[in-house]
Length: 194
Image (tube, helix red, strand yellow):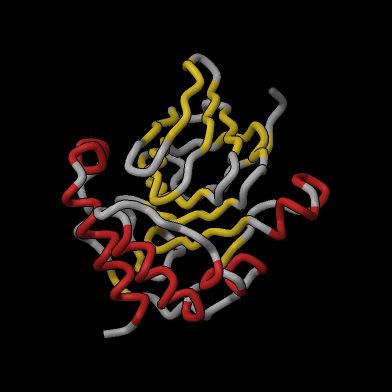
């Protein structure tokens, strides 16, 4: 079994064991492995050194992510002009499953995203609905029409279609499993005015 398959299995077990995730979207039953070339980014090159304590339920995902990091296609959606050089040095994500993921699904898109401490992921929006589930760390989430909340490990926050939202990481790195569903699943987030 490949390290990427082990990561998918760890995420599936977490997803299926977490009522909030299962209520948001059942685990996709249409997954098929895709040939995706590994691609590093600065975060991937230091993933093994990052302190990501997680919890009993999220630790298997974190361990599988660390092991699979060299085999994963790490991405960065934004340009330096949009988010700044410091942001790009401590941010990256993997599309584990979805239209362009390591495993293809047309029903759901699942990411694992990493943001370093002290970052502002400024106002952005996307057509797809989204649920963030915190694997390790904490962050403050703000969204138009919703109260601000601080998410800790094991907590989740949903965003509606095209609802502008932002995230501020605090004193520790923030690692999340994000699920997209509905229309616009193939799209990307875009920076928007607050």
